[in-house]
Length: 431
Ligand code: JFZ
Image (cartoon, protein in one colour):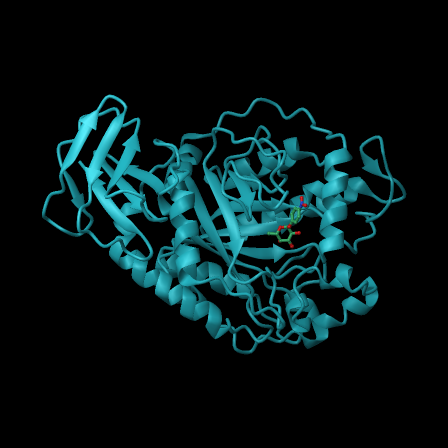
């Protein structure tokens, strides 16, 4: 896996990007409104689920274990998620304080987890389950007021017309049928956007596998916006946003950071931001992975993302039977308890108003600054630089008694004598 990722990164660094001319794009007013709503939601559930889940070895298992495509396809025969319950998943997200779900409709293995007329390699036609879980999920989300985004892979390891591994000449794979593949994607995207109620986002991935190809984003993005102006387009290409995109995502990194090496070429654009991360070290179900992040680590990730003006999309990889393992549900439940208490300092806020500090971050909503002390303090005060507006009141979140503070041109000192800091996050509210 690491070798594959390393090879990916090297090819990323060497490849010349072919950025096709996408015509001017003026987002509709519905799109702008949806972007705003998206930024207000702050916390979402990412779900990686497919026939790969059967092997319990992550969503890359076909490539990592070198399974021939025709052998891999047999997994469809064993994929029968009898325990899948859309209600349970939506309640899990809701109880965690999440406002949206992003789920894999089709990953790099090319298997469609939804009812599609474009290929029979899909969950309804090719598995004994014969039902469409994404429709059940979409209906449940619509009912419960949870927004739904679809992850959609541009990369396909198996289809003839994609021609995985074929050389790219004149921005097309040789000995494949690129036009047929582009048409296939457009058909599926049309299905996903028109047949499923209330879809508000498409999360593209796989661009990085073929940087030199013409992905026809001009046609694909405008098709999506034409079908539904409120659908936000995002693309995990790890570059500055292309025209026609509505949000920018970061993978396993906070905006501006590059700890994984994936985000080296990402420049932060002006669009709404989202960063995604796993609870253990896997996206798809991995029966061998016990590297669970703590509740504190997850909350810190969420607060740090909000402080940098980004949403946090936290992943689970459900098991092949449709259940989500207890280690994930327990953590999500505890994060949800925290959000019930402190969510006011996260939802509907904006970040990056004050730069991240060694002690933590600041979020803002109207006339209130929420100062999140995450990493402890050296002194018995906290210094918040660059506070432009006059502060009238400082208090601990959830407490009425006021804290002493001093405002100077360079910032505000809030004094915290005899205050024991919270082990997770001490929030100070400045009015
Ligand atoms: C991609 C997928 O390959 C992965 O399976 C998962 O869905 C994740 C959310 O997105 O992961 C990537 C994307 C880009 C790189 C590496 C992994 N990259 O550029 O090196």
